[in-house]
Image (cartoon, rainbow, N blue to C red):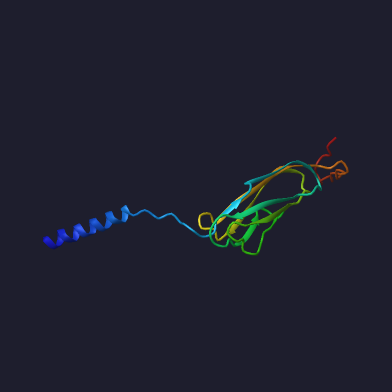
Length: 150
């Protein structure tokens, strides 16, 4: 009976000790900071320059390496720094949006890095592309069996 109680006490103390320990916060290492979370183009014309920039700063203590930056669709193309960003330094990521597409812009770019607290960072672009004046509307083809609109 003593062995059983002793075993039970050891298990209870071990379990309590596990709950008492909190995860230590990560200190040191690379940290990613971006100058803005959203770039707003506002209202731009079709075919306008759809390029914008995000300044990426390493606010950590070790080199920041961006391994990938991916747009949410093929119309959003990021170009990110391939070289490590040293502590305290900044680099520029350029994002190009295809402004041939008319309508609302609401896209994102996911940045993947070796940052210790935020390994993936999402930035967004937004705005609206208006059709340019020289864009002629294409004639609508009549579908077989469908009545023509007046």
